[in-house]
Amino acid sequence: MNMTLISALEEAWMVDVQDAFNNDKINSEHSLQALLYAGLSRSLAVLPGNHLIFVEPKFDKKKYSDPNFPNEFAKIINYCPDLLIVNRVTMTIECIIELKCKPHLPNYLLFKDVEKDLIKLSDFSSQKLTGKSLEFDVFGPDRPFNVKKNKWLTGRPEYMFHSNTIACFGSIALDDGNMVSHFLAKQHYKINNFVLLTGPAPNIFHNSPYSPMQFEVSY
Image (cartoon, rainbow, N blue to C red; front, side):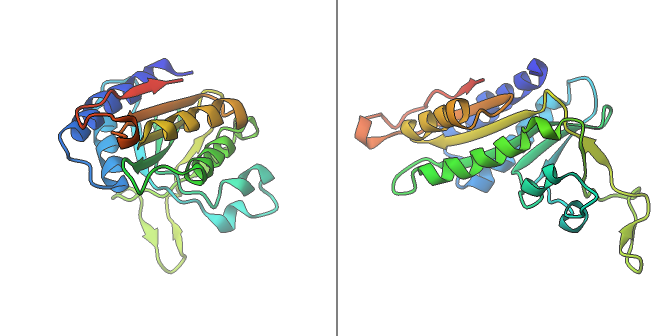
């Protein structure tokens, strides 16, 4: 796995996200998403290459449903990852991230919530996708869109899956939910290059104190 990128994930999670949690700054899953985006933007800036983070990227269903494209895309074109990291120098997909934030009852992390995201990551990490590329929408002065022709005049950038693309699941949840996430990913779904970011929340059943909790990164 790309240990340099894992270090960037670890720094963003253990510093930015943990600090926000311990100071009562996270109010929703989108809040967690924004915090991780900000932390990764900082930690990735010092790495070689030119990394870009896409937020909830969507794929061209019409294009990738075409019979001319390999059916490996069929499973993923309906997915919308929470975050996706690409390298604009190597034009590769470096990391797919799914997040969950259910830190207290009654909104604790359910098995079905974990399973849904891990199935996504399993499909994204399939070795059948290695060497395959996907187009992504980006906006800016160098990406004009022709309304009449309904297409990007300079095309859309393509990024390729490779053998070290990381599949990452991050959750702030009760301890039991985090353990289930790790077990399912490692033992059942066999997700390649899997990284788990966990933030155990206070659990009244385990008599855990409402105090700063230890965040962890495992792979």
